[in-house]
Length: 177
Image (cartoon, rainbow, N blue to C red):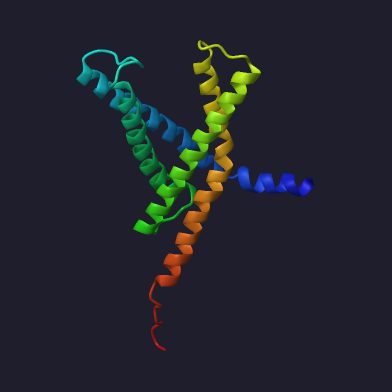
């Protein structure tokens, strides 16, 4: 038990993890901003508030979610590379691996949100009026649970990149030999 507590302290009570959390909060704000902006554009184009029964509702939700995900992921990639993992050298392969990691996190968070939403609905005897609150709570729980694994997954991507780029650099010959 003592080893587990020491491991938790060494992995999660660090400047790196705090940086990851702060970037995650900013990432969430950026995501929300882009969802709002793109949804507002759809509303402006449509001329009034888009209702869930409106045929424009589903595409506007999908497009705003996708645009927000891409914008937030790009921000998160560069911010975490610089501040969390201190990775100064990057390449397109690293970017693609990171974006794939973001996609994996997005999918797993969605799946956990769906499962927790169903469980919470059953446990709390949800009514249609309380379903939105249950979905929000389920999403929050799923997102929090995904923080540690994603921290390690993204760290793994940047560690591999660092090793790969260090090994691919040409060997410099020392002067005078």
